[in-house]
Image 1 (cartoon, rainbow, N blue to C red):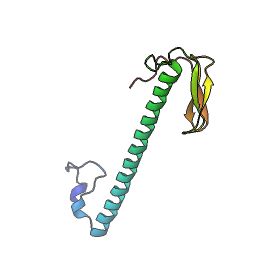
Image 2 (image 1 turned 90 degrees about the horizontal axis):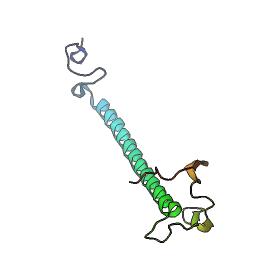
Image 3 (image 1 turned 30 degrees about the horizontal axis):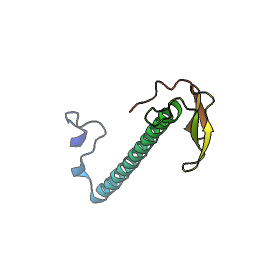
Image 4 (image 1 turned 135 degrees about the vertical axis):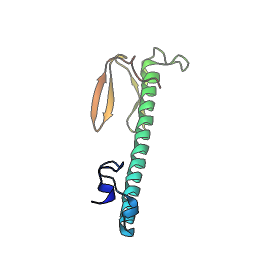
Length: 120
């Protein structure tokens, strides 16, 4: 029985003693770990971007639909409707309590009450 396989060992199951690996095995391990780190870094960046976009959407709804006293939009029905990320058209709200929210991939959800939206 190898030392790392002994039941008295403090190593968790499935662990490998890197001192016993050959140079090609160490290179393969390094490549795998680098790939996993790159994937995690990319996923984290995408998550942060999605979080930022969500905050921007919430702020837009709070300021555009609910209205803002300091911007003079409180109680007004005029709104800019985004057609693309850089093209907006003027519009009017039919009902401040019911708005359609794009949740991605072509799906829309009717948001009934705007009060419990994220404030961060």
